[in-house]
Length: 273
Image (cartoon, rainbow, N blue to C red; front, side):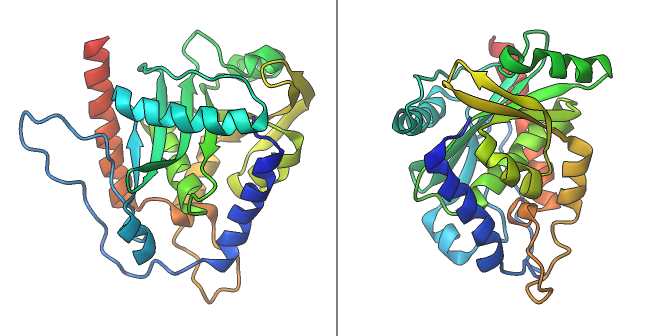
């Protein structure tokens, strides 16, 4: 769920898509660093090769929280932002069915997003939208939920959100086989998710007791998001069109590297559980 003080942030992301677009051009993609045999893989994924020089100089990067220290970084930002919105205390845990994604600028955490797979335990959205979600399940959909999203006020837009959503797509769809993503948002944010991210509303708004605010169920087909990713380099600065949201995400080569790292991290986590 997102509250009123995030409205300007969402509007800023959309505005930034128009104002800060720079063509990716023919820059070489960056491959993951070599991992010597027997060395534990680092939680840092890597920076998109097309990021601006300003973001690179600040050390903008994405991590997956497979270490307690990274999870605590995410939880600190999450509870600071939720407390400002009047929401209750949140918790985060590590599990093969759950991945918390964390964005950093240098050593400072600036964004977090958690993906929960629907592996028999249900989703947070079931509390208000069980009937709608059960229809998708009955039709054979494999669901996941994007939840506990928070960004710091100084987070660079739209790189933070696009990068976190891309990693969420890789984990949920490419690695775990989910077919649809669900998210529960405040009605005032429905337009952003439908226009920019390709979600579609299902059902009517319901009162969410967890945050004491109305919520709308939105669902996205990962096939559609995959098409957006494939088209992310098709727009140039001279096209006169708003660049696609995922033009600020990772390249195809980087996507492959992230996918391999996630698989390695999940294998290690399953062996530790």
